[in-house]
Length: 165
Image (cartoon, rainbow, N blue to C red; front, side, top):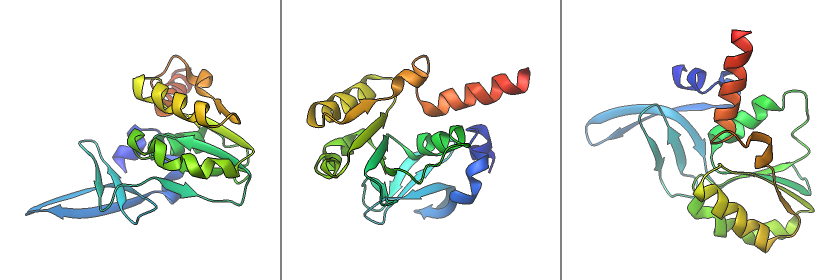
């Protein structure tokens, strides 16, 4: 719980699962996000790992509109930022790794509108380029958080600056 509080996504705790796991004789725990292959993307203060097969995650709401994120922390950050808006109007893909970007391309043709929310770094630039080149309906939404590494950093700034005022 301290980890999701530190990332300012505690309000989404009802969506977040905790996992306890063991590697050799050491026990660990973290928050987890299930991917399409049944693996778990695990995050804690010290590690970013995948237990099981690495894959992207699809959240379907029966929409013709899609939002894409690099990781699930940014997805939860987006939900936190969009409190007053309905997000069931969109389907979601969380890459869980930038290496998954080419794996999602074939599924993008099913959408009329595609919004990209990747990190403001070289990997995020590359993901955006690949999708924008493949899909003319895609639009890069990083202009909303240009001065920040990613959506979570933007959320953490907004939450901290609100509490200061």
